[in-house]
Image (cartoon, rainbow, N blue to C red):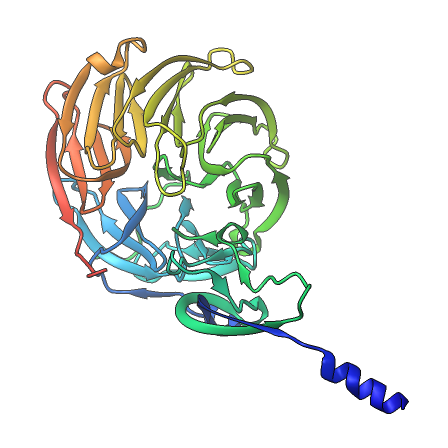
Length: 417
């Protein structure tokens, strides 16, 4: 009778099946992934992301694949010289002759003393533990087991799962639980200092330290003085969704979706927040000088409920920043400043250049407008503006603000996607 009751109990146990289509991960074994860095020949740029400048070289991220190296010693005739294959790459920073780059979940240090023979010298594993490529936005993410290896892609498949009635079924992951990644001469003459990043950067060098947004709510500081032994020295939880970093002296400006944060990084191992400025929910890169900070706010797929604005913030009292004026924009992305010039990448409205000498009348002091292409981010330096756009890398000579002219373009090749 006891056996019969036991069998009956087992037979009465029921499960429910759920069948759905989902993004199913494609894995690469950890060992193979961590031996995947290589240098290839210069190749076409098809999906550009971040931009970085160092010692006459322009480094352009190919989203998720690596970094294009461009000899920019003559900005009127830039020349692609190499491609560094770095799986899952989005961001970069360069100090001396060392390139620091993210590679999916890892941070790698690459010696580029010889631009044609880069050598990976170290890596910090799992510093970005939640980073994965983006799948089909119309489907959930399922069957994830990160112990299987690094997720390098997704394929949409039909998935069937079983669960007991009354239990809490958690068959898929939500997007919020993961970070979706929406040389001719050997031996370059590398300077000892750091390079210059665009305004969309989430890596920022600070003397012998590298600050990185490891997660939208976590800022990590890495000691990179000895690049072969780089190590994490601080992890700081931030209560906002961070997007970009900008350094000004010993102050670091953090662009978030809900405001600008200002940190004192005199002690780089212990960033200390000293003030904040709140704004509407929107994507938010920021640049600054000693008197004003400039913030562009835009709407977009991951920047909902916002407006498209340029905001000018008085930071003369660093502990009490306040809004001076807001200006309507089309869909602003990256921006840059040099002297009295303000450069704004206004999305599909193109590049706009303003005289910012009067912060209360910037909108009426437009010096130039290059429309009809999608502008993403800029680096202005020594009279040359380097711009990354959806269909090209553009450079402008602005040494004479009354006669700003385009001097070169590298065309982006359509990859068919």
